[in-house]
Image (cartoon, rainbow over all chains, first blue to last red; front, side, top):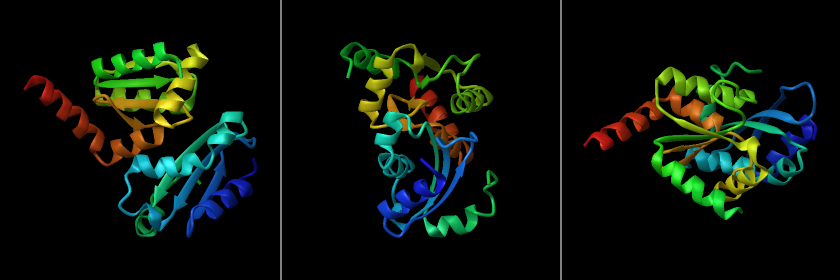
Length: 88
Length: 110
C-alpha cells in the first residue's frame, strides 16, 4: 500500500479527517500516521486508535501493512501538538 | 480463537499488574515497538511479565480477536487491555501510566 493510498483511505473513511503519513522502513508497509479529526473529541485514546486500526484490519491481516504507528488528535489538540511532533 | 491461550491470557493478565504480549523477549525484542515498551517500563522500574507473540501463531490470532487489535505489542495493566506501543508512550508522556501503576500498587498494599 502506498503512502498516498493510506492517506486517502483514512481521509475517505473518517469524515472531516486529515492524515499525515510517513513510511519508515523504506518500503511500502511500515506506516506512521497522524490523524486529525474532530470525531475524536471526548473519545478515549484506545477507541481513537481502534477507529484508525479498524480501517486497516484486512491489510494488516494479509501483511500488506505490517506496522501502523498512530497519533490521533482533535484539530484543537493538533494546534499545540504539531509544534512538538518530531518524526517527520 | 484458541481456548487454551484465551484461558492463559485471562490468568496471566489477572496475576500480573503489567502484562506485555510482544515480539521476542525483554532482552531480545524482535521489533522496535516492543523494544520501546520494554525501555519505558524498565525506566519506570515497574515489574512486568511478557509473552512472545511470535512463539505461536495461535496466540497472535487469539489476542487479535480478543482485543480487536491486529498488531504487536499488546499491553494489559490491572487486567485491562490498554493498547499498543503508541498508547503506552502517550500514557507515559502525560503521566497516566505512572498513576495507573502506582494506584495498583497502593490497592495491592491496602
